[in-house]
Length: 311
Image 1 (tube, rainbow, N blue to C red):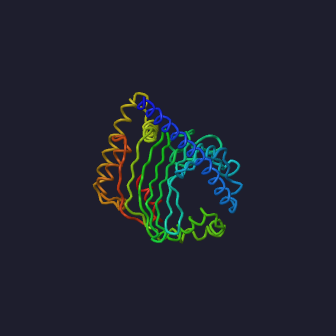
Image 2: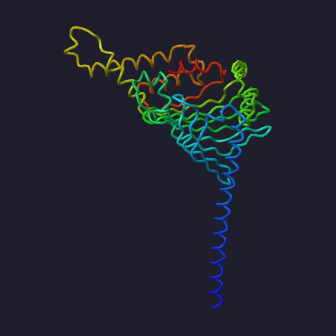
Image 3: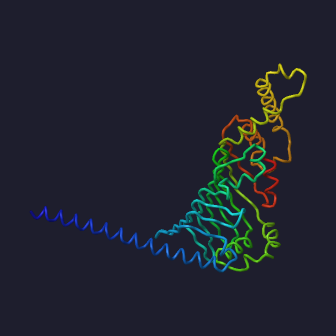
């Protein structure tokens, strides 16, 4: 009898603890949500963005994760809609700036991906594209001006990108970013745009690794090239265009692989120039469905040149 009562008592104690934990979780999340909303509203209220950022729902939990749903950034036709924004592990102290930001369903006012404005997608014949998903993980040491950055981008039926890198000599940029996150007015001074170039100039990018996965973009590019790169000759009516296209693509691929073995100043960014060049060629001609690259250290101001050299 005593054993039965003891078991019942333990069951009641266990149930009571679960109820207590659930209550603490519930009340803690309510408090965290109110605190987060007050802090975000207070920060935005002291900046020119106060009337340019709106959301339908905001929630937070006791572990410091803040979630905003149906977020609108900007006004008019230039506004961006974000289905969900999630920020976790955020810290902005005197020496540390870190956090993980996840944006799900980023779209323009027409419900299309903002990446449609990019010429790479336009030239590939894209007229529609699903909202894009973006993930950013930042760990920065302000006093050293260094940071580790992981960036992921998933554009459905186009391409998937995962990258990691570190930057050095970015003290000025970090100070400006930190000030903006705290609502500092100097970060939103229109004259600050003239100082951005000077802030970016000394920054170096190191330990860069890029992984790209094909989701339809490369296939569309090659299909367009094969469709329209047909010679206009009198015998074109009898030309087997499909066979001709395959032969042309094979020839272009072989030429690209041969060129990779030649000295080329454009390959200076790559850790292993010849192998990297061949990997890009295999990816662009659909020999491989993914591409992995490691880059040498380079000045941030040469980023545009790097992208052009890659593709």
